[in-house]
Image (cartoon, rainbow, N blue to C red):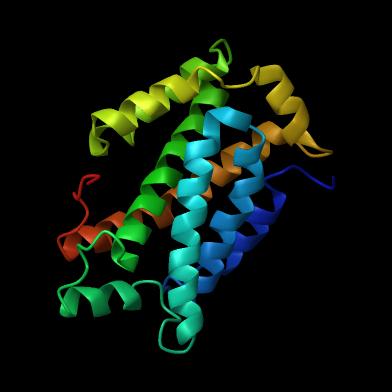
Length: 202
């Protein structure tokens, strides 16, 4: 593998915004897709997260493909749903973007933990990230399933061996966290501005 598992995502992030600084739908979803192979390396511990992220990407992508010109900008489909008062529906694209962004928050926090706490076991890094990000939005059932799944996290050395490839994995993780976080913050800001950033799991 040329570079690390993060290389395609790092490349893709260069194209997430238009020249005038607007978030673009297709490049943003492409970066999220590039993270799926990283999640795969966690095995059973991340099966729930992976299917959740995959489902939300598909939902947003299908909407985009229905009219690529109309939905070129990521927030256009949300604004349309807000105007139609359908944004808070569980199958809305707004809901899809919200949960996709939250799942990515969790992953960024997890990768940060792995860099900053070299002595932590993978399961500790996962649990800590979960409690800082997704947990407050999950009901009891999702929270319990998640906590159990985290115990299945792989050994961190094995994980790093698998994702490292020929590149500098620590440097790539650092770059990924630093570059991707502002996009996620921007999503939250926009979602908050239309009153949907605090929706909980139904």
